[in-house]
Length: 117
Image 1 (cartoon, rainbow, N blue to C red):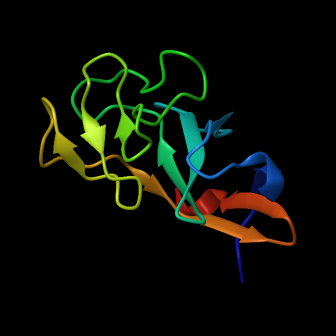
Image 2: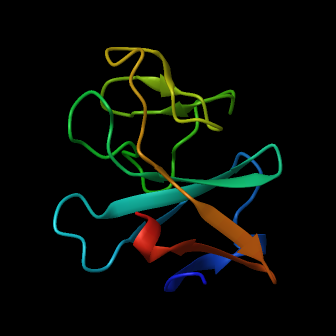
């Protein structure tokens, strides 16, 4: 049985390598900002916190990709992350990883399961 689902957005709102969709995880005591992006046709979710320092990745809301749209980037430090794994491939936190959130996409909506966070 799946836990409580939180619908993030419609599938059509999440464009390939486009702007990410930010959301807040309810009832979370620490960092509660998170986001989803679409990369190579699949939706990926992460906590919106750089692995280097506790700052949000996007300076302009929803801007998570590098200019060439190959990696996720921290606007503050320039750290770059693999969109599929959240693993830092360059920057001050190389070798660390963003906290991934399991994303489900079905019936035209993107959602997460709250008890899996």
